[in-house]
Length: 355
Image (cartoon, helix red, strand yellow):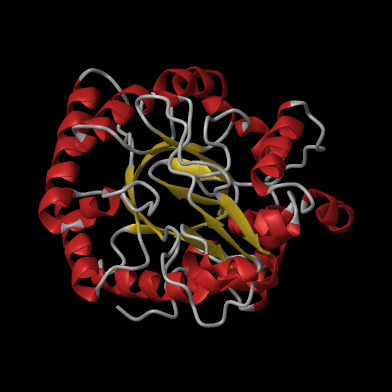
């Protein structure tokens, strides 16, 4: 399957990046990609938040922005799917072009700006698809919102009853001022209001659901320490580490490296890994971490698990290695775990990062 993609990729790369993305969504909606199981090896099965994950490889938010193709993505071998980012009101995002392939660097730069069709349509999609897969709802705030914290509360109130978990995305670099929500005072306000709203939902009969916070890789050590303290104090269940970076490593060689936006893919791997280790230590391993950023092989995924990740996400790797890359990584990860004598993936979490 991956060899077929190696033939198709040059044709797809002839298309403007966003057109190729939309074509892939159309192909999934119309059942053009054969479905495979996401159950590969019992060693990969884990349970977190009372949710069974058939394997730890998930699709990161940003691909299925409107939760249109959740079952089809699971049929590519992903253990879970994160849809979004979803804002209360539909918005077009930033002007095109806004996605750029750095093929020489196996990287992507995007400045999409939370383009999506809004909560109402997402709610319909989650109602139809959410029980067919482990699916997270990644929430964002509208660009012109007068109260961005309220945007996250509104999104959670609508989608939490339908999703497996909620992700609070305050780290996209493509919505002006959004990353300011990672500052301690405003973050504590945000998390406090979300926890208050969650308590109200559970009192109304909604099953308790986990909240995960997605953070940037570009924060200072003091910022990371503040975030660790806040999530521990507020009993937030997880961190997703990390979003795209606004830095430009000196190793970049592609001519499109100067484009504005968030950089993802292979150049993000070491940056994101470093933040993950720091946050695993800062939270003393008490907070579930989803590792994302530059993961494209089983060795990359295994490195992230041993560093402290319980789960993995990827997106750019699918662009460069094809729609079934999650299956290849999952099979390879199972082999690496068995070669090192582990009987369960949980035994390997954090073994390389002393607390």
